[in-house]
Image: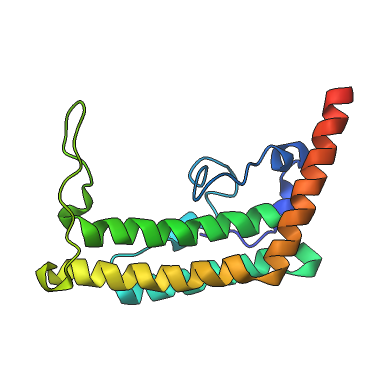
Length: 167
């Protein structure tokens, strides 16, 4: 069951201030409780499943962005799950079976399938799923409320870290 309680109300302030936006989807599978809430929504097996998952993650993103429940960390985690849906589905589209590297030490990258005519039906399905997530991810990145809350969060985090250094 997916929680509907705003996480900002149940997550200690110090824990939220320890959140790092990071590059890409870094930290998406490690920052609790924000990981467990959207994780069941993240699916990309087919384009239809990806449409449902992306729509659910977008709704979660918007819910975290509501002014009465505004929680930037939740918004950013939803954005990261959308980005991860895009990148994981793309990996399965580019590499049959989703395996990017050969097994073993110093493993080399396996060949990529970039020509759509050489893709299996499953790989084409994963490419379509990746596109679904990409479109939702782009909406997140362009979202004015997200950009504003990101700047506010970074300023608050910087001030909080200054206060912690003084004490």
